[in-house]
Length: 232
Image 1 (cartoon, rainbow, N blue to C red):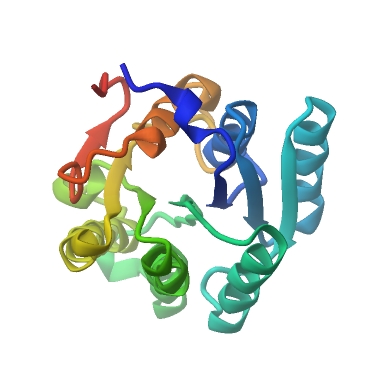
Image 2: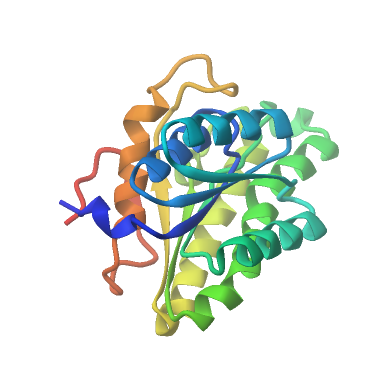
């Protein structure tokens, strides 16, 4: 079993941290002693999570940002580094989806899902890499879906965005391994959230993400980890 005690004192950015899995992950990391920078488009949501973490004795900072916007991403990362000195962990969780068959999908719907789910993860990853390279270490965890490989009717844009995310993750893992930066994928399965009325309780899955974040084995990179996997 991975020892979560190794997370104490580290700093993490969690995108899409206002609700669902992002919120649960931020709370779980904070409980393990991580200082968490909460990213979301809705300031009220992430401020509420920050207040909840603070009430439990944890440390969190809410920063409103849209991960699909380069200026927002750069400001977010700059704020985190200026405030806390470094970034050890990035959880690219922010995502949107809109159902629709290929023939019916509007370009605007396609672009939004690609820009948030894929471009957002690229921008966030690119922004934290200089800091992680400088400190010779870090862990980037990208939240994926089984739709990335299986596809499904009615999920054209979402499936494509997650497939691209998986390729981006493996590319990042190869490019950054010499800097001891890990890049891995985590598939939580269907999580109950604003996007899904049914699914697993995110608080039951978030500890698996925390365990992955605590992993420091330099050889464990470019991997796909499913919810429920016991990491050694």
